[in-house]
View 1 (cartoon, one colour):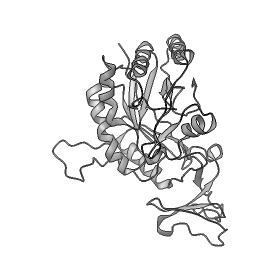
View 2 (cartoon, helix red, strand yellow):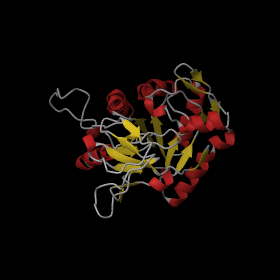
View 3 (tube, rainbow, N blue to C red):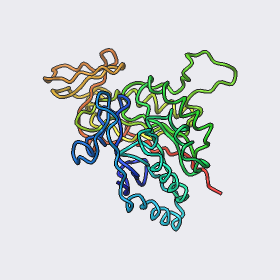
View 4 (cartoon, one colour):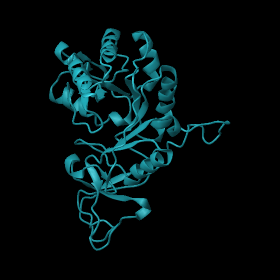
Length: 323
């Protein structure tokens, strides 16, 4: 529950507790539910029609592991990133207040670590932190999951409000799984701008994007990733492309660069709007480009990799030094 991480954008993961409740389409294929509920039976995952589920505090030994990471980081002069609650949500209102108080005491005691507090409940960040009390730890960043434009318009204003009030290390988005196009140059006001207006992207410090993995993974249109990458480049905001996930573009033909190989049974076409169709038979003629559809092939996360147009994007935010 708290080890060196296989997640590409952090060095460690830590879970003070496990268990959660599904609250958005990004939760549909939750890997934590598949592992901790379905496979190990440690908790019952909550969701619409199922109730809030259950939560389980991890062991004392597990909860103290970050203290050792902190000592090593201090000795090495590094500031490793710790993704907190990969199997839960820090700002889950079903969690006892005492658990969150203990977690924030740990964060304050590990000032050589940069904690990444990623939530699907940004509207609760300030409210639940008020019950913790004290000053916000300067080594803790806040982020929220944004899988499409609807969730961007719903979640980002709450995240930015929390950033303004709490002054975290930085604020970031995880656009994983990316289930639709996202325009971060939008600001939720439909173009009706007051003087001095700023877009979402102008107030964010880091964007992570990735496709979905797992048995029920949904494909992501490549242009959604490309557009988000280009938005970040134009605004000089660090962009991290984590993975294609289960699905990646059908490889290009050697004789016709830019055009995919013949699509086959099991491949998928996804439209720019997100409608997808898995083929049940091979096609004798290519259909790429039809209404902007992209041909995708299920290769699995490891084989799909994390190159976007042949480039690995490893942008990270600047971390302010603590004094």
